[in-house]
Image (cartoon, rainbow, N blue to C red; front, top):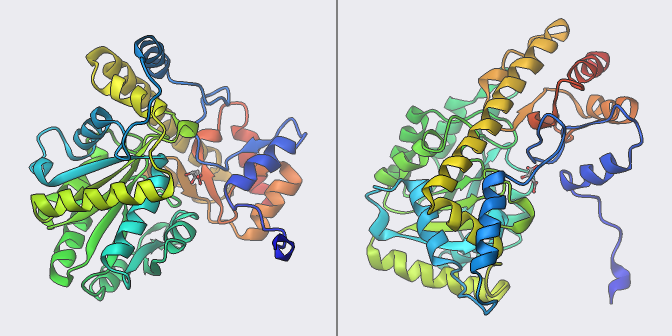
Length: 391
Ligand code: LMR
């Protein structure tokens, strides 16, 4: 049966890690997978997470199953973190703990297929490399709306709004909540408002992927756009992740939230979400969500975590400035500090990206997406000179 399989190409993002690890060049630079790194190139466990871990370990009394909805405290706290503690939507909002942001996207896709089997989901061009395989493998049809204009390194506002003005009722539009992956170019509140108006006019459902809350401008600022949307539209979905902002990547901590048009629509959709979870993985893993719930419900740990998150955000902003300055001799890279979050496109072609890898051991995604967090004082000049060499 299985002889029919041919070797698959490696994953365009995760495959970079293996290649980087095998590279013996002492000057190698890893700007591939979207994982935060400190000045020493490490991805340490946050101190607030370590403290929560000690507490959870001491208080744990059972390893019995939890429900497909996951940790109730986690779900409530994530709602408040995303939508705001005083959100007017709280009564028609339901949240399911999921195995990472990917789990949230997948559960959402399955629920959408149950609700509207012929629905198309519109994703930004470009979007995260895993969005299309992940959503389409659940049976959703995919179309793209224009988003990033490579020649001006900015948002294609007219193209995006003109396209969304044609999206039919019953389709969904996937939006990056903040820190757009891969291009780092975000929507302003005016754009969010224009999209909300179009959603109401056309009848499409917004679906927000919020994987980097706290990495752009701050926890509340990064959620303003989706909160505006939630105030304006009858229903929406939010897939969120604690991988980056809590540094819990491998623990797989995420959530899927639904805002229903009525209290019962939200409750019944939540039932479908739990039934989908039961049919795929039964229930999410408990450890990481317990850590997040512990941090978010303890004033001291929460303050510590917010400080650590601010530290990551500030470091990345500084790296944006540093890289743009180091690249001045090779061209105009002033767009880098204008963008937000972990990623920017350098604007290189695939041959140049390949040369950076083979000749200089500088690793980035084929689209020339870089993870800014992989830069530090000791590799900055080498990186800039290497880029200069391939330009
Ligand atoms: C990324 O975009 O690099 C991260 O979200 C990791 C992943 O799973 O692709």
